Length: 312
Ligand SMILES: NC(=O)c1ccc[n+]([C@@H]2O[C@H](COP(=O)([O-])OP(=O)(O)OC[C@H]3O[C@@H](n4cnc5c(N)ncnc54)[C@H](O)[C@@H]3O)[C@@H](O)[C@H]2O)c1
Image (cartoon, rainbow, N blue to C red; front, side, top):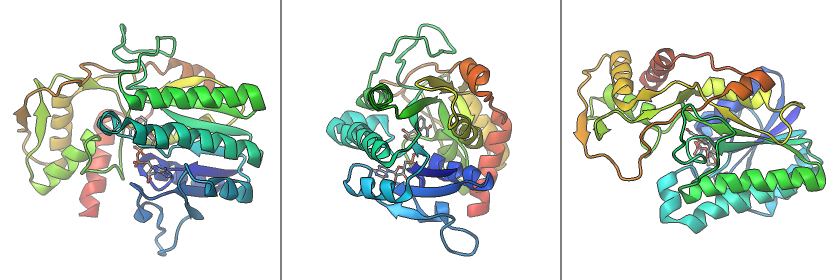
């Protein structure tokens, strides 16, 4: 099928592009390169692996690209991805994540697209859930403009499904890690640990190191997007995670072992606002989309460290 990936030059988007191309799909990328990198889409011959449209999802130019490409499915990943940035600049966050998503919905509707697969955030939209791992029935409890923007994106797309028959499925991702994640960002602790440990720089664990997250490998996540592109899951949200919790300290040990570095992080005070424990129940994705994570955290961290080692 012919598909369009917004945010396709980014970390998750470019891994999804690879999977789609491997499966023989015709892929177009839309990205404004605010964070994405051309290198993520460059083939061994030096050209782009697929057509790339340097377009902002908030702009009028998006409708032109969409009508020209006429994709059957749009995978919408382009977003402002940083919770702290959303707190500092809520209007900027809403511009990219709310108006951007609405513009994608409108352009997709006009282009006759069958379905939009939307990228939501399982780690933020449920707030601090009562039970872990949290499933999709838990009440929504956004505690950041970022979380609110993701819920808003789901709501707009659902509205377009009812109003215009433009189908949608939302994937609420856990903490995604793997090759091409930015090792210099604020988020993405696996990449941050991997980059620092390989370069012999100091690493920091906040608080007592006992905060946990549900880490899901990017190739598993790419498979979830493909699984959601069919007829199944119309109007539904699926949590995409492993259900397992890994503490910051455990993660450091895994990364240090894979990097062959000393497992001696520096300790800094706990950061205000950091959620203590987090894990997603992805049972619905298993039952309804036939999706399950396959890569263990030890294997995934080793692969990620190997990727960063090969880039040095
Ligand atoms: N990484 C995670 O753990 C995680 C967890 C939950 C949800 N998500 C979501 O997954 C999606 C992809 O995130 P990622 O981790 O790959 O981040 P990323 O920053 O690597 O990818 C986002 C991409 O979107 C592009 N982009 C941003 N604003 C744009 C705009 N206005 N127009 C066009 N392109 C734009 C960026 O240039 C970048 O290439 C995002 O929607 C994010 O909110 C990520």
